[in-house]
Image 1 (tube, rainbow, N blue to C red):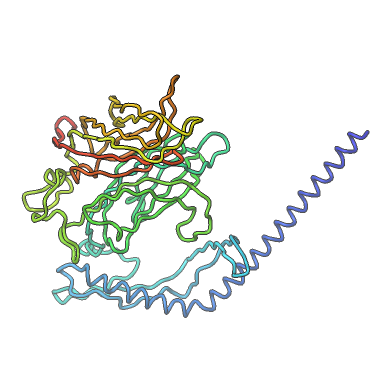
Image 2: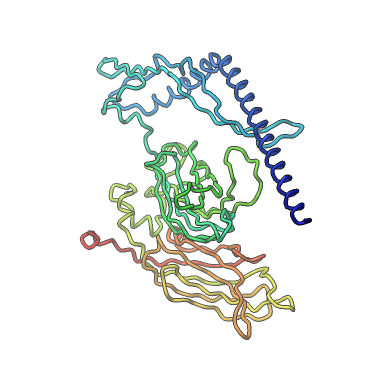
Length: 451
């Protein structure tokens, strides 16, 4: 009897909780509808003023760009009419993200079925005036009104680490999306790495740069959900203005939930990129790193053309073959691996696409080992390979993993020789001091064989 009474009481309480939750949700939904109604009414009132101000701002910002990029056929280009129309946008959704004594943060969804009226007045050097209205098909002769490319951005998506797990069972299946302009034809997508929160992609992409001072590269990491929509893990952005032309930038970027609203401070992992910006010819205020008066590195010598220019297409036909010499100098501040607070570290090195592994000697009972050992690797395609450097702790009955570094070879190809310090990934602490030297033996692809 007591069991039946308890079951009945539990059922009644469950139904009451569900009903209370449903009533609360209905109340919140009604509040959101009222807020959206008020916002839309206010937007309709101020839209004429917003339209006037926004139209003038667009006109004053875009017309100088037209003048900068017009072709020799065109004498002038300007807006003879520019208005965003009489129809105001409509807010279709609202979500309260955060609130405190200083204010509230809302996320709004907007839809705009506007009726803009834009007319371009194009004057040719022949004295012909060609008005072009929005909605008209632009003649083919004016296709060069698009922003002209000023350079090429080489991006290597190396890896990610410590990604936030979005799956309840197992681990996320991450893939990356990269773009400068968010257009489907200009967006790159990586392969999916299944069940891995520390994926290694080692994929290379090229992006056309139209304005290095204002454009940026966006990277978004998603969890592949199969037939369901992919769920974003995090995103990051690199301002192209911060890149030095002709110099490799190796960057670890912190992933965030939203690039515009920095409200979520929870860790989402990091993504590892290698960036290299090539300007086309000389740019004002920027010296051309491929000019003849500057000493050429091995990669530049191979890709240099007779006309003192940089042939982008030729770079695709080059296989950077050579000998990579790696000197493992020392390590610093390694984590303790035994009860005495010491470790017996050694280093293992190998190429991602190779089979041969090299190993240093074991240095006993130290957290700051010194090796000074050099190893040579014959690299068949250096632009698309990775050097894996792992640090292990030697034990009597085996070995324990400490951490690793994953390195691209682009910098050593460009600079020929350098020394640097690298933080160990996956370790509580520790750094590796390494020296690199490259002896090139570049060859060209056999087009007939490839076909």
